[in-house]
Image (cartoon, rainbow, N blue to C red):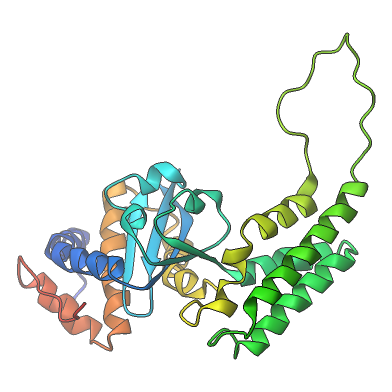
Length: 289
């Protein structure tokens, strides 16, 4: 852009300048997401000084928010940086158990993740998995590929639960028979292992409303691809850079990348907006809530 090779310190200082200037823009993004009807959530591991950290995202079709945490689960969302605890709309995510501990929002699951798990069971010659996969894909087509709703969804939910319960009964018959307890042996603590198939079926029953939400509510999408697309650039960066050297550098990246993604969603010129952010101490974002 300039015809000159910039010194590393110039790039570092410019990144820091943009980071502090974009604080108000990030707050605006967070407030807009909290007011949204639906938000996608996801997380991915990143290396910071050779140690595993987590980059979390909350996003929708208009806004992208990223933050870095040392934790993946509940402790990460207890931090002030997370918006999940205060969110009241639809939360779309994978089946990671931590998300379901937040009960003030409504939950919808990424069905694409479930289809992959069912496909793995199909490859293990599980006939019930093929039936459940076909059931979900049928609802997907009938809901205009996740853009509409399916009539008489209550009947479909009941059919779904019946199919899952039958599959659970079949899988429980395949569990290894336990021997009679030996009074001389110490009793093992904890729940007996049920295997991947039964664990999957247990989740499909327990979270059936979240699984079928896409067919019941027009605003709920079929997948969580929005979050996966918005979090993907950091994986490309890691392939090039290897890791972040400091946690500060990771946080700077998260704020700037979230802002760039939001600008693109609002059809704004990214270069012009970054130049404006670096030329003032308090940058006012041009996108509204």
